Length: 470
Image 1 (cartoon, rainbow, N blue to C red):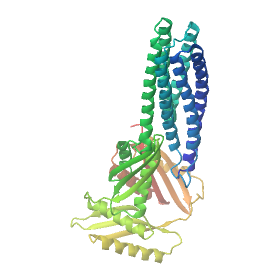
Image 2: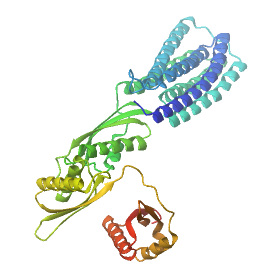
Image 3: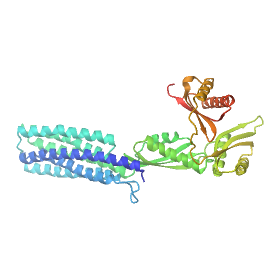
Image 4: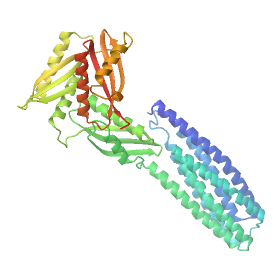
């Protein structure tokens, strides 16, 4: 089911669509009353046809309002994907109403050919019909604008429907002028042309809605692939599918990751891909990512070792960070890693777990002859500072930092005492094109310099961020 935030957004979306439909309904009823009244009074078949066409407009607005009322209902157990399909059904019903109107008008044309009754047209009738044209233009502009803005099927379908009114009314005006000049046959001819325009609009709407009801793709597969490949850990993307409606698409895809990944790592990758798709593609309401192991590509030994070491640590319920793997001239590997334990564990228990961790790593990778583990506590709660920042120490740190970076690259320096330990938090801004290994060397140089020159510091955290000015 959708999140509360998504449901709230849907509610606002459908409320906006509903307001537009109500305004358009009022305008269409006004136009319909004028046209049908004039058609019945004058006997002009083209005017009556145009009036019935406008009546279908009003009917389609009512259908749209009902469809929107149903579509805005939140997802439930019976409809876990929501009720947005009702908007598609409403658009399909509008197409059906258009076909019914075409049939009725077509039948009137046939009857007119046999009766050959001449309509009574005067200048006032032509003027009144002309006055309805700007209102139809306004309706089309409003529906198209909000239909695109809200990505609403029902508004876009109704705009396409109402747009045919422009051609119909323009043709009717021409026929009325022709009849007034003595070309009586022009009335039936224009009415027949109206029928063809209505049929064309009907099949256009039915074709669009049928695509949605038959689960045609509604999301750009190329965009989905590009966004998914941008997530860390994703090696390959395939079997992309989507369905739903243009404003509520559901996407599923298969993503390949390293086979050495743990379940929790793979799940984190899938969650990140889903988050990015929903965030970057406005019409995507939900995404489902299937994780698969990638066996079709060879990876270097360090990648495989790094994933295995982290997987083993996670499998033992341990945290792992600052992993470094290097080799000597003989080709033997040495691994250095910081292991995190819950802070209520004893030194003996932590050492035993670390030994088990090292043993499992060696079993998986015999090439790793030495494993150096640094044991760290993982606190249950957020630590609170015990004292206020020290401005003297802050100035001393800034002076030392300027031996490694420019003064304008120092974003923030903060010194706090946590649990009796003095800690420094340093934020630096480096050019965005700086290689990662170079940035890491700068961080390590800064940390070593501060620890050598300020013995009271126990912990230093250097946070690097790209300088958007470069």
